[in-house]
Image (cartoon, rainbow over all chains, first blue to last red; front, side, top):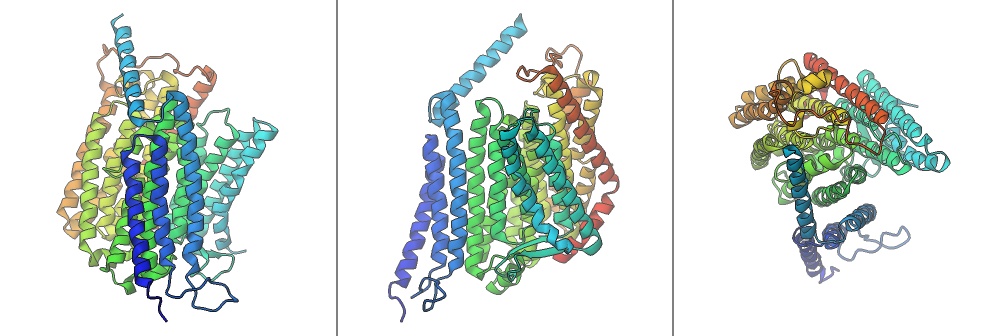
Length: 135
Length: 498
């Protein structure tokens, strides 16, 4: 017996995958807040994870236990994504550590403000150098 | 114990040794450096041993834990991987010699993780593990860039992290599509399975497109290059040397391995659009990287933009699917790694001696530091592709392959890249040798702008950096003269693919 919802379920999961990847990338590129950029990155990665997990699905699939009856869902993508989640956690940790350091220096999380500060710093440095040159 | 049993150690040694610097830091801080150097040197010995076995016995392969290859973790080293493994190990220890003498425990660990990640990419025979190793090397690279002084380093590392992670995740998504199409992840099994799935099926083409774009981010092809100049300019000198030599080189190796070892030349023949798009992307990268390098004022940024241009040329060579062109691309890949690493080492030497960072400040460098200037000139000649450097050999094979396939666009790109690189590399050499004496911003001999480290440390760092740059120049010339030998060494790999 085939699950009548199989087509709907797979379609739905793929739609969610596409939405997550799109939303994640959009937030990553568009938002000026560094923490939200990290969140966008996480959403993007989660979308890709969902794609993998969806690929394991099969109609009427059961948990792949040796003692249980078949047919089984494919356990391999789950194992892969466990690894990928660990990698994602490590990336998030490093990213947040960098955000903390940037915040400590500039006192803001907004990329546009940081850019302004940096531009101002460069200008004042250039002005200083010019002053030194004229002396 | 067979030679193939050494392969897991190539990854396990630096990975496990990465704990030692942290432990050493708890006992005695001055042990950290010694422990890290010892581990990196052991890795060099191991890499050379594996390369020697490949030279005598041919390619090695093993599956960890005696599990069938279809499910197990496969490792394989052929002639090409052996070159990359040795390059990673040697550059790792050489660049670490430039790190702050007062290395902290975490920093030593990061160096070993970087080497473990890069080596893993070179030896893995599984497309998913390649992703994991890409991320290990990536994470270590982000953190190492952030060890640079000042908040610039943190900001550059953050941007590098965002872009690098998106690239690696796109690669992972491509692997997912290939997995859905075939049900396997082992490189050896994927090749026939992808052929069975049909090279022109949407799944397979999408898989390749995502993998190529993902690795294109790591290669820093235009317009995915923006992270590179910032990261290389803000990183400490030692890290700039390591990443300049290895960062994109290892990703380039991965692109070649996936393109020809997994998707095979038949895929490129079946989907000619992929080939034309890659040539186009490479050509744009050559032009954009060259122009940006011409306009750069900071020497390190100039070198980073030059990489964008050089890897564009590499992508063109890979896309041609011609044995001579591919040989040229691989020779250029190795040659660029050595030359770029040497040039970054030279910038470290100049910076430590004079504090100069911009092209303008390199004026009359030849008078102040004649040996350094000569080394810069030799390495720059390799970037341009002047004989007898390895850069010339790579471009020669590439142009020859392009002409033989009748790919006139690609041939034109090779010539254009030479002209552009003559522009930016020549500018550096011209400043160093021919700048007029009255220039205001001539090399200032203020003994380096570094107050935190004593002048003695700066001087010894400059000497080490110069030694590395000289060694790189010697390699560039020696391999350039003996380029035929390198091409012969790589020939079995290339012939197996094409």
